[in-house]
Image 1 (cartoon, rainbow, N blue to C red):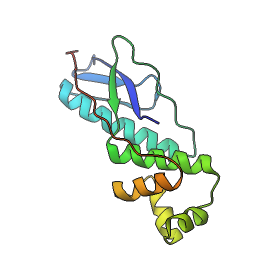
Image 2: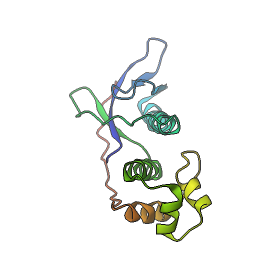
Image 3: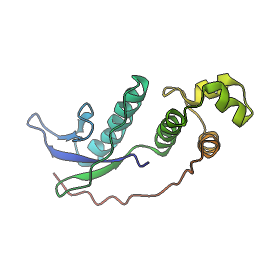
Length: 147
């Protein structure tokens, strides 16, 4: 699972730069310049995907990057949280069963699966591994063009 989505950066008629996501239409943001718009886009994407999880909605698969669009990734901690939730949902395990697998109290697992709760990357990685996954971190280089 990768949480890198194509985004469209365009001049906003009201000033600045408007950013939209074809795959996540509710994630709309902008900024006064490209740097600010990009930072806001990462945040808007993370908030929109976490809201989908909170509302028990499926996460959209990112479409291929096309000309005129830029790749935007959610922060690593958000990507790990989203990956854990997706793996747990597919596993069919109860929260209690996952807690037993991890050797922790069920309250810990509830917090780990709560989109609003901050969880350490190492704890998320351990839970992902317990569900048969592997957390892999990669980098994206910014090759942003001016809008």
